Image 1 (tube, rainbow, N blue to C red):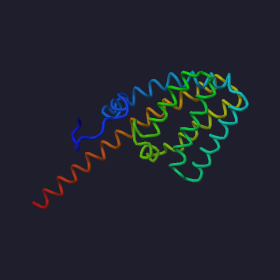
Image 2: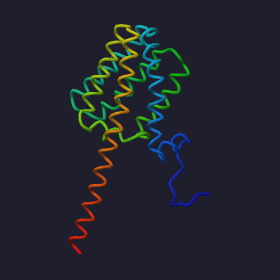
Image 3: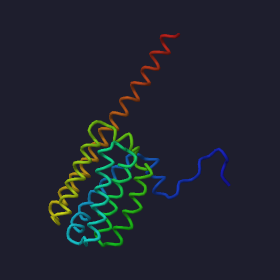
Image 4: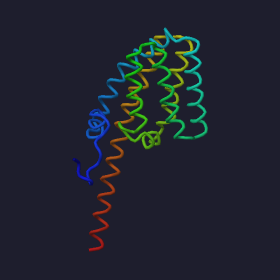
Length: 186
């Protein structure tokens, strides 16, 4: 029996791990770097016309949300775009695993995506990377799709580390400002 004041247990051990250890997001990105490369190649090689219609619709939704500055819609469309790519691999295991992981990403289990998107030029850079990936898939250019997927995941990892460093600096500055304000009042 759990204490009424204790938080409910997370849905899965993976969710608990990721929420308890933010550095596990690096493990997620490392895993995703491997899988995204393979998925990009397979989608470029295997996508049916129906798959490309789904990928195109997801990309257009992403592009429109980006242009309209609708961040929540853009983040949802980002996930839908990647889901369409994983589905186009025609690899049921990969699609199933990535569906679950992308669901966690959408639930901000790995990091606060809205704050991440607002950091610096992140939104514009991500859009450029999504566009490059989409264009390679549309051309059925497997090598280009792999390169675009690699660049996207590497960038995400680098930008995430920069964002976390900036957050830590802001946190320290706020604590220092609070101490200085308290010292002045004393």
